[in-house]
Image (tube, rainbow, N blue to C red):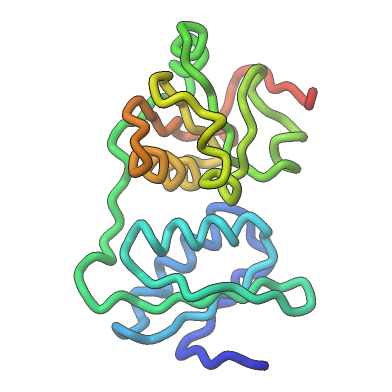
Amino acid sequence: MSLKADVQLDAKGLACPMPIVKTKKAMVGVNDGQILEVQATDKGSLADLKAWSESVGHQYIGTKEEDGVLLHYIRKSGDDKGIEKKFEQTIANEEVIDRAANGGMILDVREEAEYAFGHIEGSKSIPMGELEDRLDELDKDQEIYVICRTGTRSDLAARKLSEKGFAKVYNVIPGIGSWNGDLSKKI
């Protein structure tokens, strides 16, 4: 069954944050109420596009998979909520190790494969797509430093945690992609 979309976007072969970046740009040309189909091969795009859509007020309709391609369907919001806001509490890469050493937790929201190929020693892995189901593994009284590759996915995760009552949350920017320290490959 083929679903009707008003606009199609080809984001195949792109990794985070590019599916979100291209979707943001494409959404500018989509009329209110129209449906955008985003074609992506990055498995992380499933959680990323859903979280981004919700954060800016667009309706995330759903995703289906055809021949290894994820087809995401997003209806453009008809109001002015489509303006993205960044999570305000941030921390720089250079500060996170010292802060975590004083009782904070580094939460890595990248996919398992990304985590396996290099992560900050002692960080906790909860992929973005599993975050909502695994909130009980986190302490609301502990400072949580959310990190991903570029700061985009971690921004979405930080907002999600904040909405769920976590007050001591920080988005680590610019993320693992710009990390100058040692990375562990021990799982």
